[in-house]
Length: 352
Image (cartoon, rainbow, N blue to C red; front, side, top):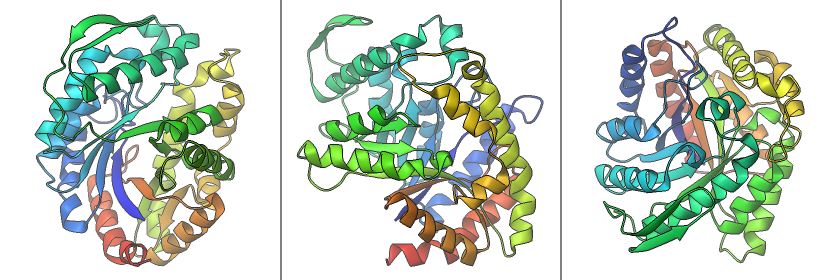
């Protein structure tokens, strides 16, 4: 199993200034090569303190690429629905060059209604815009002299510059939350899948659908699954809980607040049952996340047990993407957590 770090800004100006937040993030990136973390990842969101400090993950990853020389740089994920494919393809290839071919491009549909409303885009166009946009970016990265005539974006014969450093293009990831089709379509296409295991046992079925779609499409192996976890590792359970409880509860509350339109009668054919998904997340707490091992909080020994049990429950996954400074976790506890986890948890899983 591989372990990397993920940044999901869950703060606003009233909590922490953007320059302070990103300087703290880059200080944590400075530890990545030293401790053997495999990737650095960040989201794309807008306007709300749930993610809104990161409207362009490429910008942050370009800075991170100068702090780590070995880790993969993963967009987790860019949103084709809010980006023109010509612009997005060029930005991704530029990041691939700046990182000497370490980019892995993750794509997502976006699921927050308030973002669609502010951009003036119909949430019921989500899937169509995602599929068209991602396909156009794929063609622009893989091929030269590409002309596309789409429902949302059309352009004449174009060679996107710069050309990707990795050939034929960087690896692709699909972000998925709770929609089975997202997992199945990623498997069919031969892309890796990144997910959030907050829903607990449901993840086993979704991962199984992904692996089956992967095999049925004739791809070699079984694909790659990355799951995201909040993580605090400390010498005692009490110390870990003291750092993690309030920030994790705050993170959960901000997610529900950002997605609250799903709870007020909104529905979409592209997001079946999202009212139930968000309603379920509204009941989640630090304690419930810890109980289902969707958050890894504790001593090295207890976290090791949490990882083994969660891996068993979901049927196995390849990569863990760890949020270590979520919500308002201070820099120093996050640094200590990264170091302790790397020194006393990661070695056993590398040799497994």
